[in-house]
Image 1 (cartoon, rainbow, N blue to C red):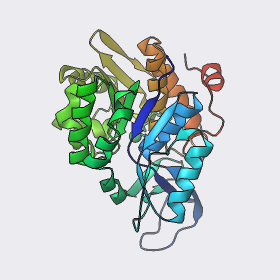
Image 2: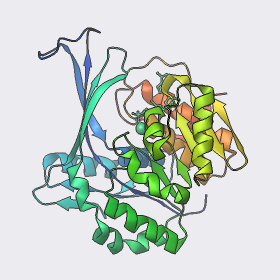
Image 3: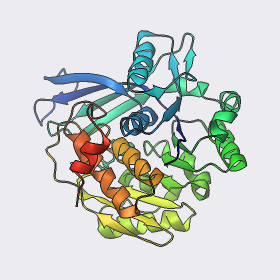
Length: 311
Ligand SMILES: Nc1ncnc2c1ncn2[C@@H]1O[C@H](COP(=O)(O)OP(=O)(O)OP(=O)(O)O)[C@@H](O)[C@H]1O
Ligand SMILES: [Mg+2]
């Protein structure tokens, strides 16, 4: 990659994750388990993965004027994400993602409160048009409002900048539907695939995931990657595609695996590695993330990623 930077736009906040001790939960009661918190937000997680892989990264986001917001920005700075343009919104709550994990570390259910992302609006994006115009690539999550997305894609088209998108959750993914033809890369998980553009099925095996990835390319995405947790992923672009098995992993905490995958795939694309190698970098980063309670692997590096590269 040249000396350019990646502009990441989207959510940053705190993850609170509770992992129950027992498979059988007691509903409407307090259960025993382990509760951990870490700095998260899909866009911010992708930014941190990129920064750890030595990609210069600038983050546009909004946090509240509270201790959580200060913690998020401090953590970003400590990890060499440039967040000097982030908005600190007076009186607003910093975004929070609260997840309940099964004893296996897999997600049971989560609630995300990223209302503060309303402050990432058209005016804020226009204020930073120069930053977008000069970026090597833009990466977004689907916490951006409809208004912000419309402004963003207008600017990206004006300045011929590639946009990669993480659909974030099945509830937010449909916001991206009008922009599929403008996406350089889109990385939905199985549930998000169904939500994206009303595909009639959820990707559940090699064949359905491959079809979904091809369909997203037929709709205009340049590269589509459909992830299916431990069942692996399918990818497609205009010249073909393939399927990559997940790395068999002892899961501690599944939070952030998809974001690590997106970050590492983007790292591969920036370095113009072959598409299947970019995908293997992605599943390797995801596998490392599954083995830590942190949302981003604290010691992630290019060396570690290539050392563990999935075959
Ligand atoms: N249990 C698992 N075992 C092995 N690999 C896994 C497992 N879960 C996830 N992965 C890896 O992580 C990748 C992305 O996971 P997934 O499809 O769950 O994305 P996601 O739902 O977006 O995750 P997240 O909520 O962490 O963002 C998969 O393609 C796979 O490589
Ligand atoms: Mg995800």
